[in-house]
Amino acid sequence: MQTNTNDVFAYPDDNGVAVVKLHRPEVRNALNQSVRTQLAKQFDTLGRDQSIRCIVLTGGDKVFAAGADLREISEYSSIDMHLRQVHRLWQAISDCPKPIIAAVNGYALGGGCELAMHADIIVAGRSASFGQPEIKVGIMPGAGGTQRLTRAIGKFPAMKMLLTGLPISGEEAFAMGLASEVVDDDKVQERALELARTIAAMPPLAAAQIKEVLHAGQDASLDAALMLERKAFHLLFSSQDQKEGMAAFLEKRKPNYTGR
Image 1 (cartoon, rainbow, N blue to C red):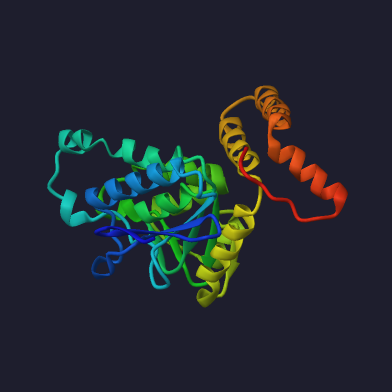
Image 2: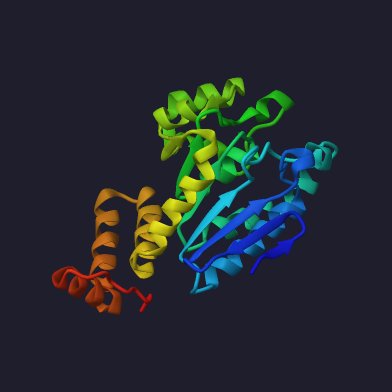
């Protein structure tokens, strides 16, 4: 069933996959407060839905998101910006326990690039355009652009993008480690869905633990991160899916994972 919240649509399917689509074509999917609120609600709802095992985030086959809606914020004061509490809306996406795949065609600039970096996997079109051009309008990234980008591609490429505002192509993003895969532009949506269905067929408890431990371990010491990994690894041996997966492997049949 399609869920419509004005500028953000969610399309769950029978394979355990939900597609979340931005739809503001008249402004290249620019992110205003309403869109961010709608995204937060969708990801909170889908994160709680046990029938959903993977989420594809897309702006469609022309543009992902061209950044913040500057018409909304150009005259704001610092107090106005603070009172918006936008970080809480972004947090709803980063806290979503389901694997998220960003399908990026066209522009992923500013907040659009930051939005893509909230995903766990990025499938980019060859001519996609990733960038953090905030410096060109007198500001800087405010939703993780300086931090997630640096963690993804390293200090020196990130500083070049941040200080010049220059974009990179999908091909360049893949080479630098910002994208998981690069494919022809007309294959992006198809490939993202293919990966999502592959992930949705996996045991959801294991997928959730992989995501949680990987994210938590990034900012921990290696010893602490390895301890988190061991605990999660041991925990999964209490799941029915572990018993089913290993039995199916030994019996040479397809497993049926229930998320228990």
